[in-house]
Image 1 (tube, rainbow, N blue to C red):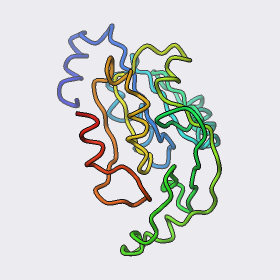
Image 2 (tube, rainbow, N blue to C red):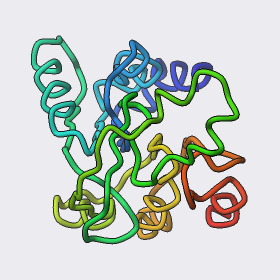
Image 3 (cartoon, rainbow, N blue to C red):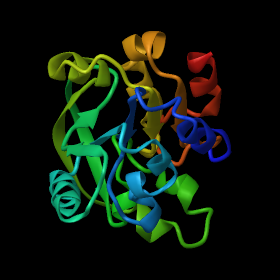
Length: 198
């Protein structure tokens, strides 16, 4: 993208193209989490970002911070848990908030690695309402998502299963975190995600 997109934009080919990104697990913890300021900025001002995180406070903070920045794209964060179907699921909130998941940590496996145990310890669990990205887009009258980014600690396949309509008709690319060994109990692994996307 860094090679071709700037050239296409410079020649005017992108002036009527709006690019829409959905980021699931959009909590902003690091500088590189400021999505519109990074690599995606090349697509601004025709850039729309929808962020999703189960932590309402993180979404409120992200939206407030956007109001104080001089941005030239659209971005909004929604306090929603996304999954494969609408309903209720347990969110396991860990001491390291970036390890919180809809799957409980596999402490027996994690004890094999130095420095992980404390970060993955469950602080508390809470029942949350979840929906699918397809249902969200239908409700909000969003016709397409071009790029889907997922980093939600083992629950990526669930969100993909709840995005089958979008995957079949509009998504051009997917970026996701995937494991080859279970850091969380019963989490889908690469061997599960790969055939689903194929």
